[in-house]
Image (cartoon, rainbow, N blue to C red; front, side):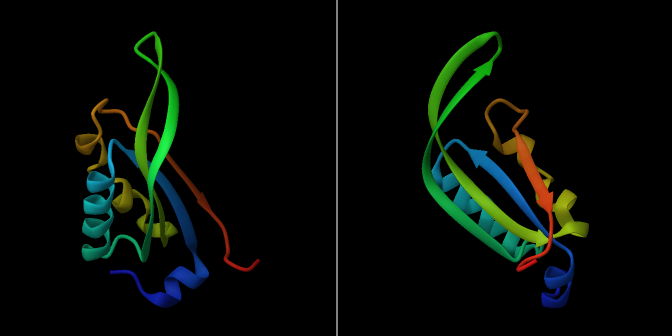
Length: 100
């Protein structure tokens, strides 16, 4: 379980996108309940342009910016493949200090 102190010392930010708001909210709530993240900032709708399976396309997705501890990044990313329709979701994360 994450502690407030750990977040202040070793923060990490994870970006993830899912097909719709309901999916990203449910995923964020699950990660909060499991203690894998301290905060889930939800962006309800973004336009995504992408190249996938030799085809260029666009679509609407929902995004979450997740604040977690760097030691829990992998836990925060677990299970995402099962939620994403392509099975290979893009997950971006970075470490750093807040206010530094």
